[in-house]
Length: 523
Image (cartoon, rainbow, N blue to C red; front, side, top):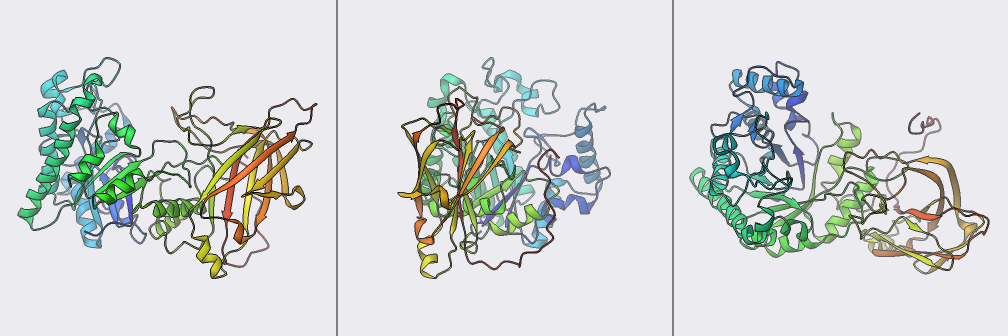
């Protein structure tokens, strides 16, 4: 199988099973495939149920509905009914999706969550825990008490059996091992010594796939979804580089655990180790953006991210959990990000994202550069990374002037401040300046997410047009030198964001004259 250009993840739960009003039909069971046909998606990854309780007719793991008569949870009831109706139709969710994909030429990898924290009595409590109880669990009080302990052979053998069932009985095109769900695998004080057990386990998955593939006359690729950074994997006993060196994986996906997507992210480690092993790396981005215009990344931001990843050696993106049902925004993203080379000379937005974490505590993203307080006599320096091959575009005469936007929080227009771009002083006379007394950032953060920047403030924007020759591939340095602060303005000022809009002589439609006014967030 060739390396996919774009991977799309459907967890089979939020974006399929629980959406189906009973009774399900063959048409609706096919929907995970049908909804992405005609886009750039060439590999669909389908979740195998909750993690330890499955939506397909497994002979090994527990299936939704087994051992339960009355359903108090509405969503679980709907999923149970999908499972029942699919069985009556002579199929199940996984089989229907694989068969539909085969008809259309798409590849499908079932995705097995390697971990689960469900407690006894839960609808998601799996068969292995029912049989062995706490003996197969980590057992650390307050930390992963009911998560599986991969130091136990019974756990590893159970997962191998489930994998074998899916690859052999369902003839899945390949498999994803999902290591990013319930992020614990060993007892806290045994992680380092037991990491080789996980390396051995992944090697056994490879051997099993090769054995089944030999019997069926085919090659079965394997993919693992892990953490984006090496230290985060090693901290839980996942030696991803060792897996790749051993040839246990064809592809690896780095999942970015941050809340906000950074179009200029610098994360080359995974791409480098995958390339050195003859494998390929993919990047799973966050889904939110800190920006006054949108709460979800725009297509220009996705284009920028695509160029950044391609420059660093990633084979592509791994997307999922997009607003559903998919609309024109989502379909444009799924079309374009599969072909970053085609959109190399289309407009892109490279913007800095704020540090994340609880305010006044250590940040989880120390590499981020904003917000930064403006202090008299000091200079703030920011680097905005641009991945576009601007030199070749300039040679061909295809670049338009780029636009640099600097966003300030509680800016005092009477301060004496000098701004520079790659060493050139930016005159206020050439800036387009606008302000908003009560700006709202529309990003919607989920539980546990926090950014160290305000979601509401008074803002100023300084926009400068940059000649094509001013923009560099790589780091573009913005400097803000505070020469003097207005003494009677005692409030705190800060640089809150920065963006380079790279523009090209692209094919665009003529502008209309009757664009309706866009209502601000919140009405």
